[in-house]
Amino acid sequence: MNKFGITLAVAGLACSALSFQAIADDNQEVQARAKELGLEFKDGRYRDKEENPAPVVTKDYKVDWATWNGFRRYHDACHVCHGPNALGSTFAPSLGESLETMDYGTFMQVVASGRIADRGGTKYVMPAFGEDRNVMCYIDDIFTYIKARSQNMKEPTTGMPAGRPAGREDISPETKKTAAECFGE
Image 1: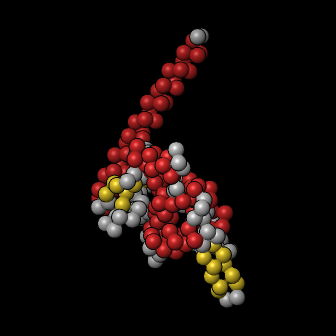
Image 2: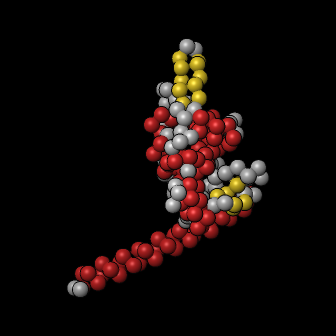
Image 3: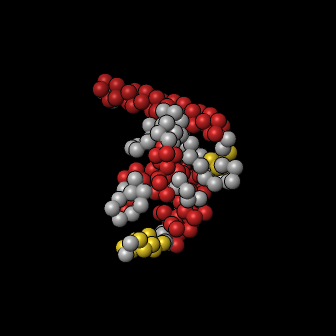
């Protein structure tokens, strides 16, 4: 290996070490924030007192793994109709606003079974995603992302603002196991 190759390898190792340290720092920040919020880590995600999935967002907008993954999954499956950042579109409502009043059980039911609403002579159709593993295996994560957006829309100093999170907690072994089981692996 020539001098350039060695320099490049050393630089790559230094970047990897910095990345691992950044994730470790993000993990600590997110876990401390979860504790402040009174959330419990159970079954691979943070949960509130009613055992519903709950987002964790630090003051500098680093998030728990579920909210991060929900951001990714939302922009894969939901944003086409409900708009970027859960703000809604001309033919689908703002999910951020919907989750100000919608509970977790209702959210699950609507996503799994779909919904048809007739408003002023216009039919709005939410398709059923109950058979779509790419949605249902990550439904808790999608919920936490939208909930974090909802919190920010109501009070801009909380929750997650529009755009990509500033950092994330690492995925836990429990979360990896749950995802693998959902996909039959």
